[in-house]
Length: 141
Image (cartoon, rainbow, N blue to C red; front, side):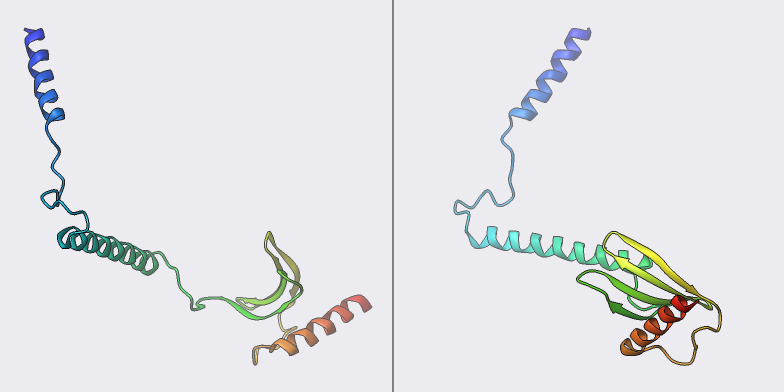
């Protein structure tokens, strides 16, 4: 009985495997026919729309945003070399000077509360002057 069932299943699978596969658009002989090109174009546009929709959904629902919100804000920065920067950030009420390079971020200095004015963001040239002033003050201590 088991052999009969095995041979029946084997014959069903063999007939399905040996059957000619049906390919969409296989009725047209020319691969560059209008039907085939239209089908490829519609399929490509559908895939591109799916990719764009997935990217939009990922950005919308995963918290990616360009705007700065919350308690962390970059006040100013200066380039120190080809790929190194010094950034002055405000985290809550505290100001932090960070050294940023491709492989790491280093806390260079944490300013005491009230040491830097809250009135206006520091401009790039003002940042350089402030950094130089702070460095000379630290060296003098």
